Image 1 (cartoon, chains in turn yellow, orange):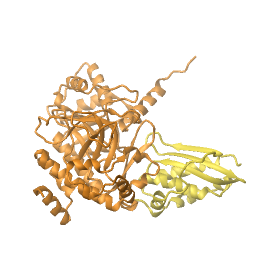
Image 2 (tube, chains in turn brown, orange; image 1 turned 180 degrees about the vertical axis):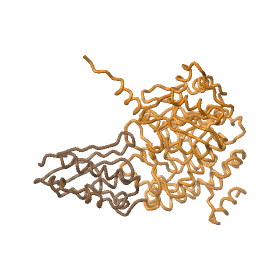
Image 3 (cartoon, chains in turn yellow, orange; image 1 turned 90 degrees about the vertical axis):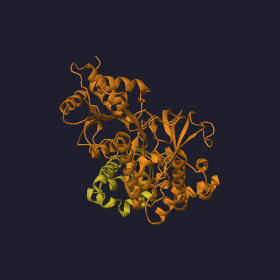
Image 4 (cartoon, chains in turn brown, red; image 1 turned 120 degrees about the vertical axis):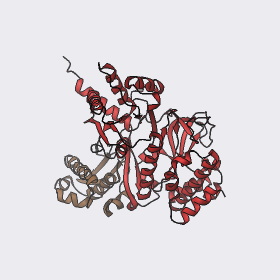
Length: 119
Length: 392
C-alpha cells in the first residue's frame, strides 16, 4: 500500500515540530477529510533556513510534508517556484489511486511557499 | 484450564485464528453463561496483550513503567491493569509510534473527524481488517438478522468519503441488502427524495433506514408533514449510529426518538435500534429488540472511576469507558475513550449474556466529535451559507 519513500518518511518524519518565531506560517487542509498541515518557515540570507510542521491525516499526507520539508530547506523561494510538477511527482514515488490527493497537497505546499515574498 | 481456553490455545497452535473462531461463533457465544464468556474474553485479551508486549517497543516501555507484564494477567479483574492508550493519541502528530506492526504491513486507514477538524486515524493490517469485517458482519447478522431488503443510507456516499468511519460502516450494510442508496450529496440532504425512494420500494423490498439520529429525525419530521403517510414494513429496521448530541450541544432524547420515529413510520419501537462504535476499534455494540447495546463477547468494557482511572466501577455506576479489543494487531486495541457510560446491572431479557452498555455523553473537556457531528456541522455551515441574505 505504501511505497518505500512514503513508508520511510511516515515512520521517520523529518522536521516535525513548531518554530517559535517563524517568518511565514502556511496552513492547508481539507475541512471534511481532515488532512491538516500547519507549517512554519524561517528564512536566512534569502534561503529557507528552517521549516517545522504539524501534520494530521493519512500516512501519505504526513510523509508528503516530511518529503517537502527535506527538499525545501536550504533553497530559495525562486528555486521552490521553479520546481516542475514532474519533479513533484517523482518526490513522492508511485502512489495508489487513493493517495493521489497528496500530490495536490504537495503542489499546494509548493504554491503557498512559492508565493511568499523573498526575504 | 477450561475447555474453551484449551480449544482456543490448540486452535492457535494449529495456525487458526482464535479471535476469528469466536467472532464466527457470535450467536452461540452470546448465549454462553457469563463465566464461560469471560474465560473466552480473558484468553483472547491475554494473548493480545502478550503479542503487543512482545512486538511493540513503546508499549512494552509503558508496561514497564506501570510494572505489568503478560504473566500478571491471570483473571478478568486483572485486565484493568493492562495499560491503555488514550484515544487522543490517534490524532497525534506522532501516531506512528503507536504501531505494533511496520507500516509495510498496513492495508487501510480509517478516519473520524470531530469539530476540531483534526482527524483520528486508525491504521489496520490484513488480519485486523479481516477480523474487523467479520466482527461487524457477525454483529449485524446477530442483532438485525437481515439478508435482503432495500435501505436508504442517510449519509454521504462511500465514493465521496471513502475513509470516513461512519460512511465505511454504513456502506458495509450494502453487502447484506438487495438494494441501497446514499442520500447526502455535496453536504445537502433532501428528506423528500428519501421518502419518495421509500415509496418506490413499497411492495418491492423490505425497507430500512440507516443513518445518524439527526438525519433520521429530519426525515421523520418531513414524513410527519406529508399528507400520505410512509408506513414501513414488518421486518423494517431503522438503525442509527453516530451519537445523540449535536455540535450545537442539543441532545436528542433517545427513547422519545424511538417512540416518535416508530409512530411516524408505523413500525414497532423495537424496530428502531442504535449502535455504538469507535473508528479506533474493530466492533460495534448493537442494540437488541430490548434496546440494550450488547458488547461483542470477545470484547471487554472496563468502566473507570472518573477521579481514579485505575479503578473499575461497578455495573450501574457511570464512568469513563476503557475498551479491550483483542482483535487489533496493528496497534494495541486497549483504548481509554473520552466517553462516559455505564453498564447494565441486570442481564438482558433477550437471552444474550455479557455486558450491555449505556452511552451517556463525552467526558468534560473532551472534544465533541465524531463523523456524524462533523457531518452535521459541515451541513449546517453549508445551509447557513446558502440561506444567508445580504444586509442592507
